[in-house]
Image 1 (cartoon, rainbow, N blue to C red):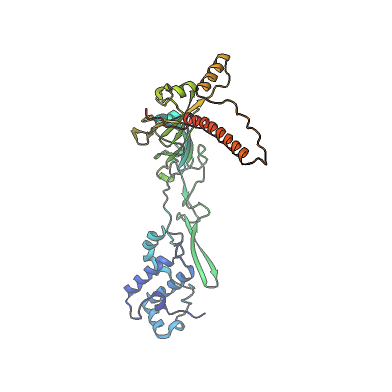
Image 2 (spheres, rainbow, N blue to C red):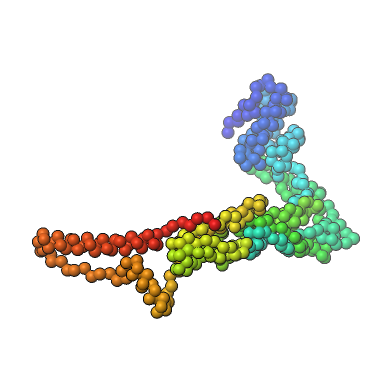
Length: 407
């Protein structure tokens, strides 16, 4: 395989200074390093590293300038016999751009943040509307008080791992067709801790932490809805080796109410209305989350008419002084069982309103009737339609939907 010119690989002129070569390598290494998930390219990074290893060394650069790749012995393009000491000044780059990276050769930070926990909280409808205080019990990890969190039995302590010499990582070299490639992996003997426990604490079984219950007083804000989350900081699992604790996220669930239906900050109520009140109008006691309230029912109210009750809805979250509204859906109930007197009164009402309770049978019309008989038939049909139309018009006028005014 033909090797590219090392100056071309770094993107510098042949008379570039050592500082220019170093800057060029740093700039490209950020993008090509294998730990960079967006633009990392292991093959291109090897080529870049080989070019920098040669051009950053005055003696190797001089040989390369005179004889090219043939003037280099030991396989400069393949990592065989390569001295990685030239890359020690790049540790801050890998730490900044790749979080220290598993190939940087530096031991990971021993401090770990604790895990976040989830808690499901069930609320009644009115508890969610007006807010409440709840005591919840959370089981989380805490440092073992017997071993002070180190996992070793009393009187003993962790010892340095012999496999990694306390570094928590080991170097692993593999051979590929491109040459030898060295990477840093987590020590399998100590799991990256750098120390091992020879005699485990009987209380925590060597883990250094135990799970305990903790009671927490939680203030639930007014207006919270199902699916909302409340965060309790530093109430999760304790971090390992002195790390900060995680948080607890409380997921809110709200029970349905038998009479109220919530829509954001609006509450909907279904309120039955008697036939007499719907026709004559009056005042009606309606349930609200604040207790019973009186609303006016206009005369001629139709089933499905709505009445708006301002300020009787759900408080706005984090602004409880402002509240939504309540919408009352009036449902006219038609009596199903009538006494003889009630039936007689309704029949009298229908008679007063000239309403037919039974349809009139149309007279038969001969198919071959002449113009005169046909005209009389059409005239009768128009009369029937006119009569029927007046009845339907009256029913539409009486039962047509009308919106009631505000409370």
